[in-house]
Length: 244
Image 1 (cartoon, rainbow, N blue to C red):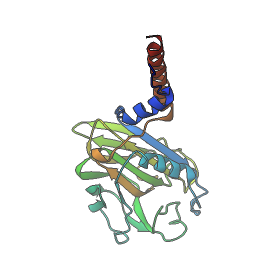
Image 2: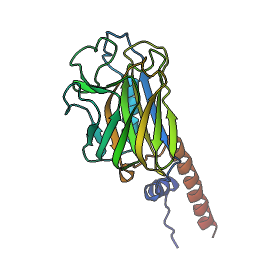
Image 3: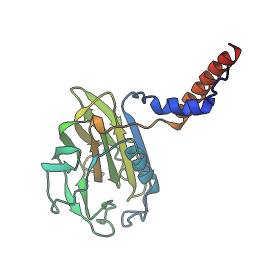
């Protein structure tokens, strides 16, 4: 009697496609930073920050981004934010919309996309109309006067995150920070500044996503480990059939 042989690695690939991705513990964070060239110079590129954003977005589907382009210069809080395809929110607290078409504002801050961004030297918060499970943003000129950004994620309790930005670096830096959470949803985020009133920050291109827009991709190492295990299991089963 002939036996049909299924290659172990082919079987592995098929099983990998069929297996669901196991939800990871929350929150999963992404960070990239490009140090500045001084307060009067806009970085011509920010590859580290952009790479962090790309990695963050690769785990999401159909999320929305607020670019601040729809607001007039000097518009202050409360600000009605719109994240197309993902929801709406209200920004409260200190700050205003600034417009800098070229260069910097003279103090190291500038937009990432378009002409506008959120400028602040104090704390502010964002209250979401519907709970979110993912959030990311660009930060500009953070840390050159001892400031560090902190986030308080609100979900009935509080989850605190500290952004690992460089402290007392050059002005004009750009960072990207994002997180997703497959186990907890958040109704608000408060931004803190450890040097409030001294270190002023810019924020741009804020992105949110709901829980059903989070679609985590497996880490390469985990995928390899899983594939190796499945290949071994397939080979063992084939050997058992041969010996039957």
